[in-house]
Length: 508
Ligand SMILES: Cc1cc2nc3c(=O)[nH]c(=O)nc-3n(C[C@H](O)[C@H](O)[C@H](O)COP(=O)(O)OP(=O)(O)OC[C@H]3O[C@@H](n4cnc5c(N)ncnc54)[C@H](O)[C@@H]3O)c2cc1C
Image (cartoon, rainbow, N blue to C red):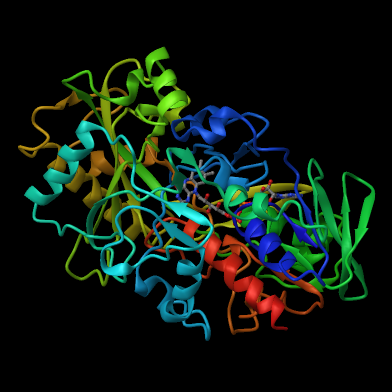
């Protein structure tokens, strides 16, 4: 029984049902993924705050000017892989080695990345798998300003990466994307659809799971939509994501006993780590006007729509985040601490505010936040407190990253395009002003992890086999188990966790 048909849940449904002797039920709160804006790469922001989105809001962030931030999450077949920005960025060797968990070092997990991957086009250095189900491609119609950004990185002396997904990712690169011939290739496309006709796989959509059912300490099934129950013959696996999985554990009586009792929930097992250790990539952006009318601002024209539908090319195949640079803001950093993401459009307010003129965004991303937050309960509802910038070092790194972004925009390569600052960006200069900009306008890069932390210690939520500590027949398999964030993006590790999780389950 798998709860959640997102990135990891789709992998599990496919890999586990490959054995005809195993019956798999996959239960998903959202519905089908047949909307054009899901398929069409540039359309993802059109899905925000719709029925395809959980549409979460964080608690007030004391270090972010008291703001409550919008957090989209996919509520649809494919989960967040159906509305993400398609960037396939595993992170570097250090990200997995630093977990220090037997069986989860970089060399241990590498085969699971390559098992998933179906790289088409460039594969220099043979870093990718080429026969897996998940298509990874180059953008078909990258913007002319993206080439200028890459040239600017060269000008500043950054290293050109032949492939972004090798052991080290320090340097710059166009973004590899999860697309197949110009169309989004979600976890559902890669894993669920090919398995859909198997008689031993049942997919239940539109079913919001309320809780896991226990017999003593053994998970025996789930309850959804306020009453319907499904019994599990073998195991219940939570793949409901970094918010959904800890929330479900707590609603089922597994969490900090005091908090559960306060919320009127009967305690099955006192496991205080559930929901703690929340980490997210915080982004602060620089917006400038583009001197030439070449950006994605007019991407939705009839001509572009026709070009997309007939040829599967043009601006609507853009994933918005077309190129990246991973940099160290100080020589003391052991690996990149900041990522620059180049977008050939003013991507403001999560793309919810349509651009009024041609412009460019460089997003500055804090890769290894020291701040920690938590998922909690407010009665039956979930509360999200990412604790952004509660560690002072996080502000310093973002300020240093913003200065590098400004250097990029001042290069000769960017000169033909780079105009003046674009509102609401007011070209802050001093460290204090830059810190103020981060606090007033910083937003999520949509990468929460860590809330069902995997570890070898008793305080961890799941063990290295992804079994929930203190109960039986229950695992968590999704991005919530990551002990720390990767210096990359989180879709690739979520898929890897699904692949490795399936092997762990099959071999137990
Ligand atoms: C807007 C956006 C852009 C992003 N861009 C990128 C990117 O470009 N590159 C990248 O690497 N990562 C990106 N990410 C992050 C990445 O997509 C996620 O980290 C990854 O998909 C998480 O996988 P998961 O399996 O942990 O959870 P999800 O894919 O979120 O799946 C969880 C599933 O569980 C379901 N669920 C939750 N609760 C319940 C319940 N109670 N009952 C039934 N079902 C439930 C949800 O509906 C969902 O389908 C982005 C995310 C978002 C939201």
